[in-house]
Length: 145
Image 1 (cartoon, rainbow, N blue to C red):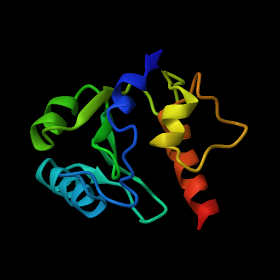
Image 2: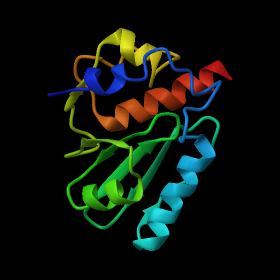
Image 3: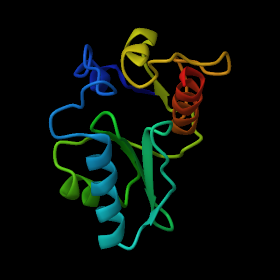
Image 4: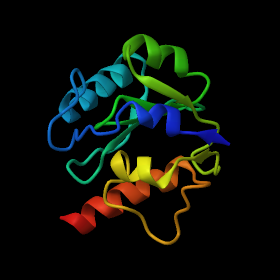
């Protein structure tokens, strides 16, 4: 189980949905990931702001999914070196599978950062997958709109 608290702690008190973090804006992050995808012949998934806060790039056997609000990405082996080179300063966390419940985080830190709108009863902060994290952030944003 990978504890996200050490990574999320650095952004406690930040509100990038109101005022972007220095060097990391929604449009800038999306543009940098698009450039990465183009340069390395990767597939860029659809990204529809403002509801979606994550951009995903994929190769046939590798994935990187990055937040557009925080300089944070979940990256599989095979893309980790490329992502780190193209996006210096990005906090990169290992990704084995989009659907494996490999992560946990304290509810307080999740609410203060990645899931500011909360989450549904189907989500557990003590064991979740990246796919669930992305879905919860979109559902929360849609509900808030």
